[in-house]
Amino acid sequence: MEKREIIPASEFCIYHSISWSFIAGLQEAGLVEVDTVENQHYLYVDQLKTIESLVRMHTELEINIEGIEAIAHLLQRVEDMQHEMQRLKQRLGLYEDDI
Image (cartoon, rainbow, N blue to C red; front, side, top):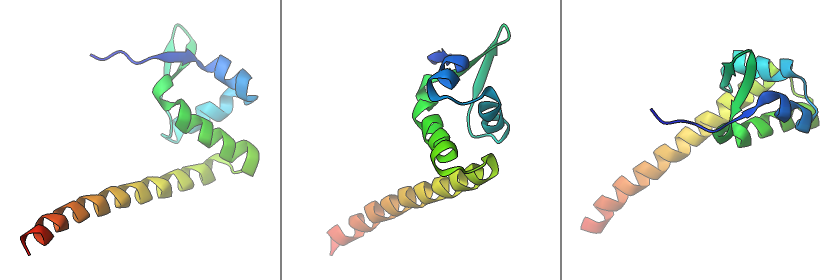
């Protein structure tokens, strides 16, 4: 099993001046993963970029967790569609080479 790097959630919250309840809300919405070890919460380093963008939506744009959840869902759909378009372009390229 691969071991993922973690950081204490409390440090992240202090650094970004946010409350733990915001991170807990993101976790409840399924937007971030939080690991708990001996009553201490930890965030995965590979998710920090995503979490920081969600924090910016909340603090700078004053978007609540429900809004962030909707935006994250739409962004994921856009990303999925971009991947699908790239895949289709590659498949189309195979046929164009034959012409």
